[in-house]
Length: 370
Image (cartoon, rainbow, N blue to C red; front, side, top):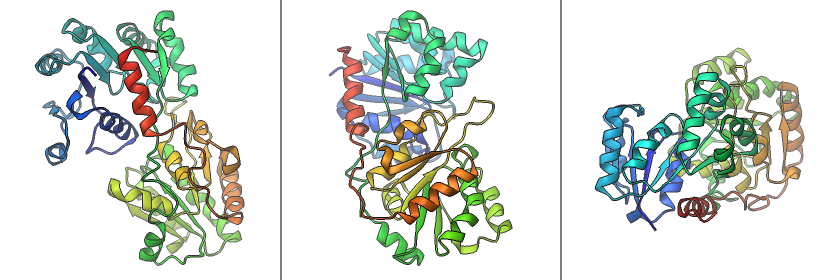
């Protein structure tokens, strides 16, 4: 396999869905064939030292397609003899594609996520996205919903070269019984208590506030229920105030962020997983996919999925969850699914969406055999 240069702003130790996606793809290529060029961030040196492939950090905390950054990326591409390039997000770094093509890149893949949807909608940014589509060999999309909104911004030729590449889950890490009982014990939650869990960054789009507002109705039907909000983010203080104002006390636990290796156990601690994501900012901020929803299903949990963007497409088995919108639907779904708790089914239909499958798909796209 040829050597591949990943050019991305989204890479650990920063946490997020795109960071997880790019990191997982890198890990599923031969380590001697991977080179990463990314932004600088706190803790990056210690993180990079543990990786089996070289990582180059731009001096800037946000990598932009400037001439200076282009020269640095080109230097790394030439130094390692890379003839394949993956842009971790098509916009804006895909604008470096013409320069890297002239420097020797023979095949380039640009990944798109939720934020390219708004690039596709606004006149000025739509033109830039179209330019990237024409310069790369493949533009990917994570969900059919995203495809339907990004494709019209591309030329006919670029549209014909689009390919689906969705984030996945590692069923070896996320599975029923992968540590949830120990988490409950540590938190003092009774084994029989109904638990709703959400492991997602605390931002308004994810809908944790809708869960808190719905919780009094859930408690009316399940008085000993616990809502477990795992994660951190800019919405944390507002959520804490919301819990206090509603007098929900210890029935709602905000745990803060967790190390990546502990997330499977916290997911497994729930009986139901809920992320009632909603689209914000007049349609410019959707939930493009939802890796955590796949992780929950791999643990055998029924899921409550917000009707936002491509998130409903993650519900692999319609009998194992509900797609909802608004507080009333969220509360009704939680009450119903908690009442129907039963033995978990391992895997629960996530077979089409695994990281190994995503890695194999990327290798195919980089070879140009599809």
